[in-house]
Length: 444
Image (cartoon, rainbow, N blue to C red):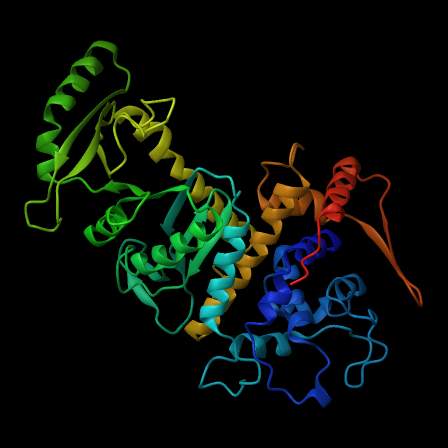
């Protein structure tokens, strides 16, 4: 808990996030500031307590109260609920419901544009200023719904009612988390999102080359044309197969079949060609890379479209990095790592727990889960680099570094935390603590 709090103090996350909320409560009756409420919610999300009902017991935790900035961690001086220093589930629920007109909770409204801009700014700050090339991974992940949530849509592919949020990451760093209904495809609203993402990265790294990478759901002429119209912005996107593409790949497929017949092993043959849709869906012809693969199960052709130069960029030492085979196997397939990051969002942080009725409240929940992931990712990147947990999932970091036995004693002036002497990762914990304490605090 204290490590999570220290990362927050260095980033200024909850302080800045509190500025995105209004506070229309009567100050006479206010016992929990907006920042304290947000810290309580996000810290507990990072520690694996994603349900508001969990706070019925967590509100009595003196260590959590200390991390959230409470001067009275035992809550003995409270007027209304003595003995509980923190907010209960109903208070936190009112925070999430404030933006809904049909709800009676209107005292803590938030500005969605400010929150999204804050996530984008904080994510961009984590990208090294000296970066010469930035790869943005976009993906849409279906979050299944188990109620009558606002805006839910049935999707035949998933055979369920879902939301279809849009995520953007640079490596492990989250930049965008936009909740969308599933009435449209994966590429809906992506250009507007990319415009803001690229602008934020340009402010951070002025001369960096930006490459957008995504699967075939984002293969839209509008998106590719926008990238082509921007300086130093490129794309590498998957394509769904069709008859025209298969016709262009027949020669490569024949070669792969012949080699497969001789060896019996899976064979890949790569080729490239210029392609333009016949129904005038594209505004121009583009470079397409085809993977003609033949396995024991049969043909498996795959396609990507890109405007990355085949001979590399001027000044690059490696001129073959964007050749057909390397572009597909080394660069495009690297986007699969983003799916591992999204799994951490869903499996470790329960970002798909979108169980309130209102769309705006579920969007806020998605943002809070993303901010919790950002805290753990920064702890891993800044405090655990070079250790055995440097590449661990946030769930493993939480289990091995945060969910450890400790004895908490509260005196008049201090809160003592005594860790178990049998804890096997004491050296890593101490190293992470020293590194985080050495970081400058956010001053605003």
